[in-house]
Length: 309
Image 1 (cartoon, rainbow, N blue to C red):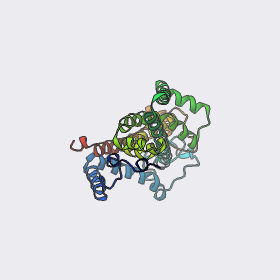
Image 2 (image 1 turned 60 degrees about the vertical axis):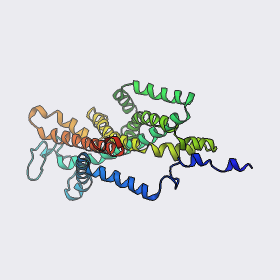
Image 3 (image 1 turned 30 degrees about the vertical axis):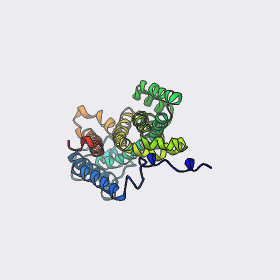
């Protein structure tokens, strides 16, 4: 075997991430420390983290402290106004509304986080493959994305939700099946830039496979775009679940969700039962805002051009 074939070209080895001549452990720690420092100094990051921490404590720790019965209705205390025994009152079935929001938050966050994770993983892989391979593969894969994006998301959600019996896993699958399109386009655009860089070209010259190039170089170098978009995906998934629940296509009773609580209470709003609507609406807005704040802060911290903003 010719030694020139088996020995990497030094010109290319200098540009490969992880090469000791370029990225020492000290450099990596320095970049990581800079990112963390900039992130923590961002006011949006601080507000988003505090709000998200409070919401998680409210939903997952709250039921351990504030015990309520969320499985059996009690029509004797239906639509009671907020009081000492029921701080946010009761709904039309007699469920304690504060406890209802805690339990409903668990399902809303589980669906939002799970759907966002699946959509981000699949969309990132789809976009990375399309952008790196290029040619006819890229054209076909992105035309699929364009066709699905041309169909209104709400229409597809209603059709899919009506075709299948709503449950937690089904809602996660339906929402993630429509949410992967945006990360696919974002990662594909980032890949088109990354594939022209020296360290990716070095993999091709040395006979590396497309799989190795995508998973070892393209995806890791797109992680900033992926992470930032994932936070927005969580917020969007929570809103989509709220919309489906509001339209009666959410989790079936006795399961609770914020959207279902909002939908049930809207029928009583004009009768003066404000506590059936406003608390659920406020917590949905606050949750979405907290994830959006985190996304903005991550974008500013990862993009050098925005760090001084």
